Amino acid sequence: MKSYFFKLILLCAILLVSVCGHTQNKFTDSLSAVLQLAKEDTIKVRALNAMATYFKSNNPDTAIYFASEALSLATKINDEPGIIAAYLNRGFASSGLGEYKNALQDNTLALQLCDQLLGSNKKINAPAISALKANAYASIGSVYQE
Image 1 (spheres, one colour):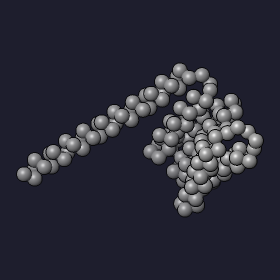
Image 2 (spheres, rainbow, N blue to C red):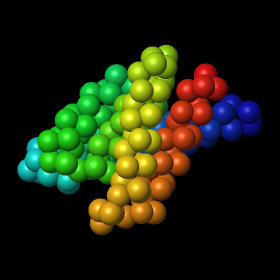
Image 3 (tube, one colour):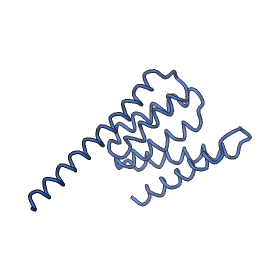
Image 4 (cartoon, rainbow, N blue to C red):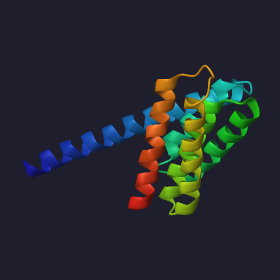
């Protein structure tokens, strides 16, 4: 009976891993397709940041690459929310690599940009920028906790 139960659990685990792996590949494949087809616009910045977010916990070097690409493009096209998200992604990934100075620098830049936008007369999505600001504070706190 124990052998049957063990085999059933093992089979379920293998199926779960294969389904999860297949789903993750669909996600990254979809984003890769967007990256190949998108012009240099906010859609591409969002896709680059989504890739950075996806990889920031399990593959921080890759996350830093995508976040840096997002930061470069967002700066070029003046996509301020994209710049903030890129700084936050890069900061989180840097923290995961133990690069705390870089993490603090990126998160502080994100926080400063949030403050500038919230204090400006620009037409912005204030709740979204406020959420990014909260993420910056949380990330800074996590760096100091480490």
